[in-house]
Length: 313
Image 1 (cartoon, rainbow, N blue to C red):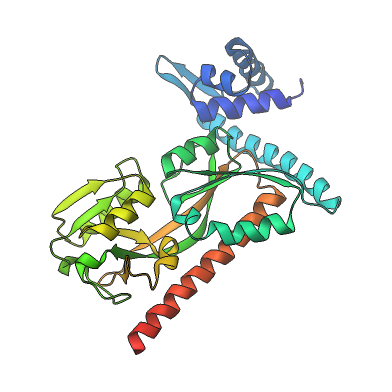
Image 2: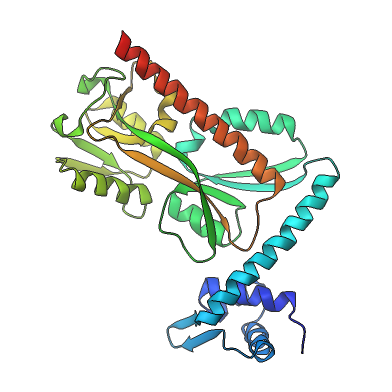
């Protein structure tokens, strides 16, 4: 029996994730005919059909999907072996490409980064700020080693795990007249003029579900996929925004922005780490994520303590 090659395994993974021989070839820096030949040869070797071809694309058969899962396990094992050998050298080196939403870059990133570069100076870092849809595409294309995005329904080619569950808060300017850190019921904030992200953003769908489920009327909406612009606009007007507390910790005690925990019911956001399913996280990536998770926990404790102190005052 012919041996299964690494190129054939990569071809299966690429075709399954891209749904096209053409896109798979582009990803693998190969020709379309080359990818087709790899798949055909593998199907002959295994004696099973892996893909269904049609005029709308390529879809894995049940056997193909099962084999795809085995392939990404194999690729992940190879990657993990390389990382283990580097770790044996006693130094954390290599490149690390990270995708983060503004939720994390505004308050959490700098403390994590300060510690990380001091402890691991040989790691070459690239950090990209973006919204969930863009970061997800970049992870799938392996342009990023991992990204942190809101929890979502998942996509073929990605593996995810929970990073943090964060309570959301109302952010307003002085014009709304709310008391800092005093809990608010959104249905009582009349009129509720809300700045929200655009429809492609996963957070927008989660917010729409929360408002509809709880019967919270919204008088007017502005769509804005610009976090700094959102905060500056809210600070200068009577418009408000619902944001994760992670992004707002440095605004506690400021005079231009008011942070109000949301109650009856509270609203939570969940954030997940996504990575290519065919790879495992490198040592340098795991160390960065450990630092990020610890910083998020610290931020959440700061807000919780400030809220308790406000209630006791």
